[in-house]
Image (cartoon, rainbow, N blue to C red; front, side, top):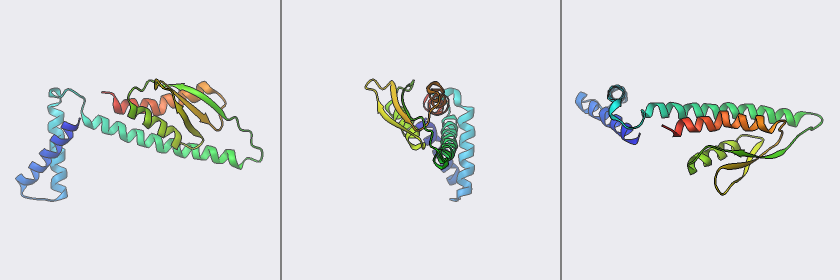
Length: 159
């Protein structure tokens, strides 16, 4: 992936020198030409195109902001109720993520979302212990995290 990005950047710089123009628009045109060339020659690369990982990273970022907004509204609704009927819970969530940075990213995304925090990661790094401020169904909470954050992280990290 890094090789593809560097190659695309190199093609854009060569395009700028060929046109004798060092402007942003010339660089962007060269970058797009390089991207087209990389797409045409994609069968010579071992990994998938970096554009797909970049797109998956953008989707993960948008998913986080969506979840952040929804959880902020949810916590606000819990706080402004006249009677607090909270069901705080600590539960164990098994994870399919393998690399340290994937588990760290998942833990950070869960912790940054209001109302939830990762308390501990098991020694074998297969289970996250999560505290949530209001949980009706543990299986539903686990499925929600697995189908949103964990799935999006796997899209970014797996070829």
